[in-house]
Length: 257
Image (cartoon, one colour):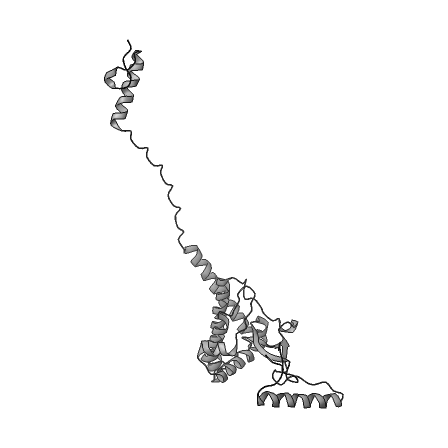
């Protein structure tokens, strides 16, 4: 990538950036944040962007059990609030998005890292971008999910242009966040459902039949000796027992003179 702006749009953007930089330099001020990134964003290597929290013990079975319990809790909370207030604070779209975010291939169970792009969520759910953003805001408002905006440094920026750009958000689930935003009773209900799911997992593991050990192979039978060979060996043994050597008739040795 060339450092020199080539298109009219790049030239105009670089010109505006140079003017802003020059104005800030003459005024003795530093240039503010890049317009291409949100203000509350942190570099991917910044400690404030390290928000990944592992669900359960990081195993596939335990993590999926936690996800099932959390999605069930969100649905119960949504239906309860509809009976109480007449409206659903989450809605089916947001609950489905919660399941997609936590079950997607971008979720690393061992580390707890969840960082899908908005385009990936749009493709997985079939929602338009604005619907994804609205559902995210609902989930975040009631504590079922949280995220941190992150940025990366542009490796080859345009002279005078932005030096950073937005990258994927990092998502996480925190029980304390659920308790503070949706209520402690919702957090306790999540724990209750999670305990039930784990109990069913243990019961299924105990009821699963174990395969019997493979049978020990029996030794192969020894092949039977040929009939003529067995008879010749028997005759030879009898001759030795009598103290006389075999005769010419049996074809084994000539007679003695």
